[in-house]
Length: 562
Image (cartoon, rainbow, N blue to C red):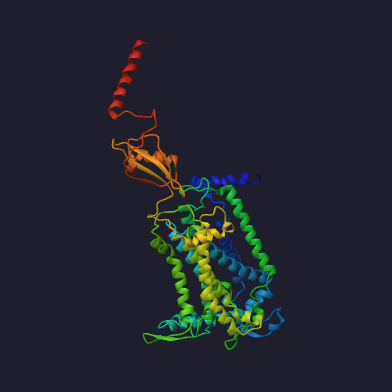
């Protein structure tokens, strides 16, 4: 109330020049669904905001250089020792700069949450079919954001020049060198020379602070613009259709809710940064090319590549006269196929299912058993690869040989994902006829699912369970009817009570009575014309003209008598 006399004139002045009132009102009336899973994308957005805030602070004190320097600070074990400027500044941030350790650890936790939220968001989109037409472009934007987030997470993890991150950089350098023909040139471009090169950390700093965040901000803007233009998807439910969105308006309900979520994300990340230690570079020590630390493992978002490198047999072969080293298949080919599959999935599913229709309503995962099985198989496969990246930690904890742990993980990776996918497929088919959740599935439902044939997938070739039919009568009038298929029973048929002069009029009447139900033009059902209800017969066109003329004449006669 106190600020209103000051704010209102400023708002009116801006609107008189920019004409923002009408688009602002339209934006505030936009509807957002209320389902909790739609908040995963916002968690990623707010984690990115925390990354930007803490990253600006860290950039003021971090020195991206491998030049030798002598550490002078409060961390006694490093006092007076010569190390790289990057490592010395990372230790100083942790022990000498007020609030530096809180910012470092919050930044690291925010990166982990950011990538995790993007991954979960993509899983929600995948399993509910939100990537289908017309949202294929937004899916491609989201996958690109995941790639950039992984790249930025890895460069930020590697910049402190500690022993753990340096070991990871050395592995990455080996993977890049394994690319046939162009591997040496790529390593020179990425690392600035033979590893370890003086240009590696400055180049990563440029990409981490300027290049990748700029691309992410641009893609977030594109993602939001497409979302606003195409509106939100939503789960099926009462009152929800292909042409509407049921939920909360942007102002005030949704705004208050999303601001509360932002505050919660901010509080959670700073709590993690203040109470839970992560990436203690002063314990690892500075990077030395001749040294390595074990047991050790990278952050989870690159651990799947690390796990693949640890599990893949050390085999090399020649292709067209060129040597293909062992790291190439698990380090390059697996990653390339992974993201190629993500980029191509919307088009592959449309190709194999024949479903090229636009969709605004989401699927239940159980309604697409094949998609669910493929997704579960992939999650178990990459989850086991992440776990296998800690094979040395597990061996040390369980007091067994690391070779035994590697052999066990090889067997698990080759068997468990397929079993999990098969179980998900059977349970999805069994759950399709169950009104409740997965917990309501009985043994009889599972047996019935195993006996059933292929489950029809929605597409042009599949007749919808609810539909409207419109047809032309022999007298050139038009009628329509509503049909609904029922399991094990005769279809429900409701005939329209009127006849219409044109196909458009009949279609509009049907769409008004049953919105969001697909309409198709057909021949008269079984060659029979349903009789209209008694008392609703309409005269022909000639009869209507004659009746109209008689009515006008009668009105004039009555008016003349008065």
